Length: 258
Image (cartoon, rainbow, N blue to C red; front, side, top):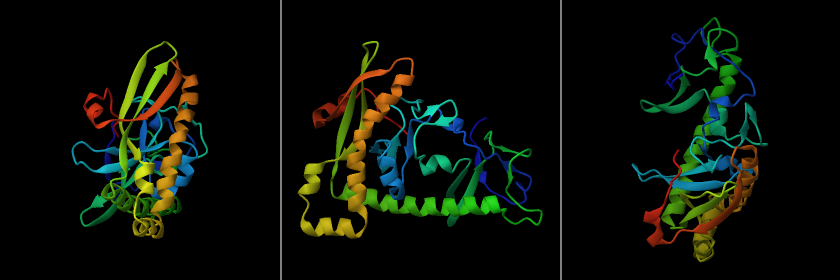
């Protein structure tokens, strides 16, 4: 079914139920997932975190890489997630929290296979109040929204301090083919170490310094993606990570997108 997020309405959706299982099949074609600062430490121990820039809005975002190619989620084998942590922006589905007028509202994907009037967890009681299940989901979504707002402030500060550099990954596959994965940015450690002491203290007090190091350390998890590719038809034989020189940026072959 096509994705169709609409505001959750107690009248319109009073009979809806959501299937609760450990299946993440809906994310099988998701190669990037938005990451929030409160989960950086957990994510960084499992998967790479990188910055990307929206070509339209020019805004930067932090995402976690789930695969090396568009439409590829290496953390999924069938419906099973291969890792100890699942990004919050995947767990939230089929719900989302989005601007609704002058406030944030809970949305639901009416086109999701997880949503039906058959079996599953009811969203509302017979009296029209949120069910215990929905109440828990709303609290989770509130935590996610708060974390996303803090993440936006973190990203804005990193961009303001000019700490990002373009990076690229050179992949060689088992069949001998090669390709570049570009369009990503990471923290330049040299620029970080050269920051004035007062700016480092400011980052520390804001809780951003630990987040910066989590992002830097997570790049090592690119090796995890190489290992996971062994379960595909054309495994990655080796990988080389390098910074992109300004004169080479225009020659990028492929850029990850959300």
